[in-house]
Image (cartoon, rainbow, N blue to C red; front, side, top):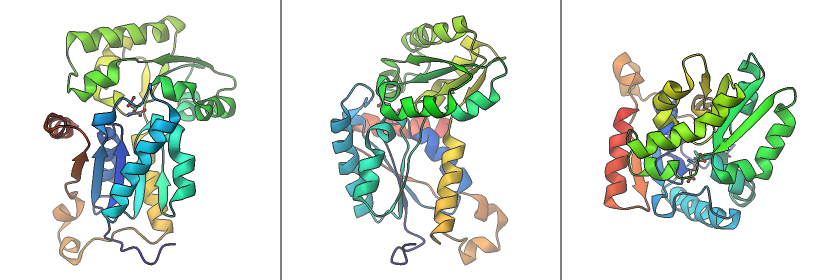
Length: 270
Ligand code: DGL
């Protein structure tokens, strides 16, 4: 419990770029009274091909920015950053830090033919955390992994429907189709932006799973446990419509004006 922290303090959310917006949308729906500050580290994206040390340096720099803004908790809305940096972050800071990992466990439970695919970054798939995840939850299922090199760059530029993006998706989905996966994990927070394209390529019979909703529930649970949940204001209490509307997040980025534009555009379509 952190009695010194105000319940109406914001929650800081970070990602290598715009991908974490797909998680932030779940957070704002689940926790309509919370204030969120989102940091897109687009000047340094993608993280997926960078060393763990470099990613840790960026995560510390961003955590410092969000904490300076008064954050009462942090969400690392990035599978790659979680794998590289969640342990050192938790050792260094006293506030709660929620991370995320590819949804191997729910995918293994959902799969009917016990063949699951995982689309993620190279960094995530090569990490010790991912190896541990397979060790815990991958028994009895065939797990086909596919690194999606270049895909994050397309999404960072807001190129969701371009021919180049679709060609990459075809290439990366094919090995999973060939293996017969009936459940596919979107193991990078950028990928839900191209979810509809992936679904079209793999077919409607394949289940796609991401972890945004689970992260939102976990954040709620942690804020409740620490008595840090922002209650409805008295103005909201008598107004059901107001009480369910979320406060607009603040968007920060290390990227350019163009990143700000893409962030606003992508936020609208979620
Ligand atoms: N969105 C990030 C993830 O969930 C990483 C993308 C990247 O920067 O490579 O892994």
